[in-house]
Image (cartoon, rainbow, N blue to C red; front, side, top):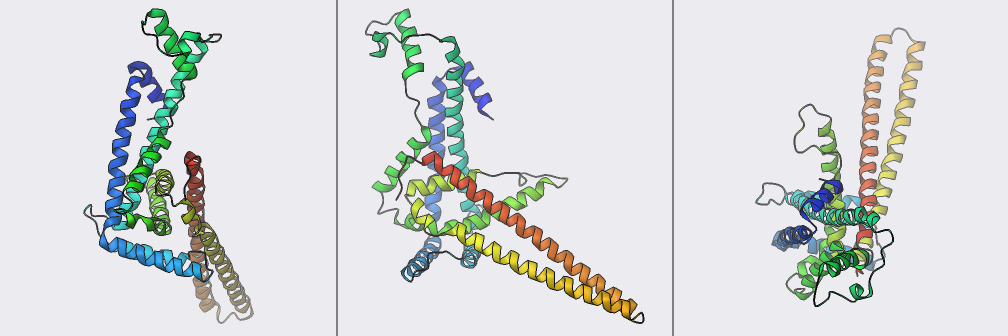
Amino acid sequence: MNIKCLSASFKQHGLGVVSSAVNVCYKLLARKFQLLTEFFADDNMNSLLSREFRWFDNQKNVGNNTYPFGRASIFAQEVKKLEVDSGNNALDECRIIISEIGNVIALGRMIRAAKRSVFSDELPFLPSYAIPVDASEGPQSKPNAKSGVDDAISAILTKQDPDFVRAFVNVFRGVIQKSQSDNSFMGSFFCIVPALCLCWMEASIQGKEMMHKKNITRDGYYTDDGFAVGLAFSLSVLGQTKTYESLNWFKSIQSKYAADEEDLMEKKKAQQVKRNAKISASKQSAWFTSNTEDNTQEEDAEMTILHMMGKRLEGNRREMAMLFFSMHGARAFFKDIRSK
């Protein structure tokens, strides 16, 4: 499904189906968001989130405003121990729900883009059309063929195109604010974002590796930007975008991978020095040649392991960078919507 497919469908069936399609998107989005709230309403999940919220609040009081990578990893493992009815662990279930929310948002944006595509295809047929005064004032009490054409053309040229995504955010935010006392457990939603990012990174790498296998299953995919859109949407609805930024999670990730890369480079240098020393010792004594060759093979195997660790580190860094870039771009969908 793409914009071209939807625009062709609108031309075939008329733009009257747009409202029906948007209504279906809204109902699906409401059902997914309800599942998300039920997930965080669980006592075990709420207890873990409350603990993380208190810990980070205490860290801010002492001047530490960076959420550490190690704590996010430990928290992710604790959430994975919780099971849900679907058979997945709790963290994977939450990631899937947020990805589905992002996919619904993307579908709404695609519908709007297809509608604009239909209008853009119709505009070349009206190069020098001047909107009649009576048509700009609104529909006439006694419509006829001419007034009907004028009204249709006036709607194309002057009617404001509604933004479905912003309408979704406003509706859901209004519901959350009205029932704020009942949904108080959602106030610490931002605390689970670092753990969700690590879970998404593992799933994304696994999905891309599945694409290279001979028997590709539904678990194989080359991209998943629905999670970034769904996460940005959820933070915007809950008004926690600025609160999430206070975690400085991206800065923590960069520091962690930079330290790991520096440590890996030191290990490679030490291993290379050790290997060169053994090679030079083998040249001086031919009696220990066979034993030295075995040691050299062991050193080569250790260097291979270090190279594999380097590739894995670079892959993790690339995936996390793409996630943060996607989240930053997805926030532009809601840039006119103020969040706390």
